Image (cartoon, rainbow, N blue to C red; front, side):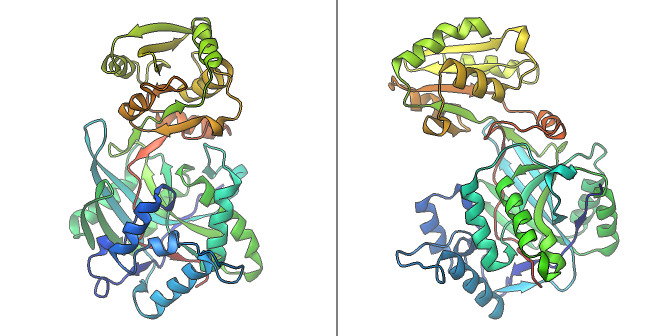
Length: 416
């Protein structure tokens, strides 16, 4: 089945009315802490946070609530010219430059367009994680009121020859960015409007044979599918598409971090059971320091499954699985073998938290007799694609594409 990625009439802040566009963007809604929400609201009265994460009130009702307030505010911004819709369809190019925790500097380039919504069984847009109902209900309520994509989701595409990026590079070399923001939310931000019919047709044709992998945004994609079905009676084509950031998976600007697991609220028997069982499944190598452990893990990256384990008795262990289970992904080994079988954890949500920083994981465990840190290498993007192409899913938080992309550069109206 053909993949459809099209240019669109983006809805954007009018830079002549909104001075300092850096003050109206925000991180994705699902990573914003309450204190950060307050700070973002204070940055500018038109900050996108007021749409993507409107504050609830104690007296909210079915008729007046955080979702209806977001829709009212968005429509007000359209009416007063704060937000203006582009007159011609186009793609948008979004660059982020950043220093990753591995010490390297990256520039990640995304193409923003609309993808035609297809159910997962059509094998056009591929998931790699399972989702939960709660976040989908929240985003569906917001979509029902706003009839808009307020932020793009993040998809990956394979393009070994780099044809699509070459088209983008030709455009960005010849044109200054319309938005050029200094570092904020962990990266700088540059933004171009690719308002070129010939180039856009080339890009659309190049995407037609490419499956797309959801890197971040599984909940919002499923929400868009549900809303498309709800609005099918209108006959409006806009509901059949959603706004996406598309990044080439072979790009040197794609930084993928490990997501380490923290186990809490374990009893002494669980820890003793796991420690005793380790040699049955793993070669267990004891190391002296966190630095030694992380260096050993790094040497095995892309070569062999390997897991680091730190316990509150100040023991660092490198776990390398015996050959009988070498074909399992690290994240699967951690969740299914270590956490569920060895630590005998059944209610995962009650015991697991996550961090991308090994220092934070080890610091969290020090002195806590009921805690364990499981340290990991990043999951290679190629493995994520293999799993998705096979119709399988991975444990939640298997990948962390660093950093998060900012929200607010462009919105997509569904009903116009």
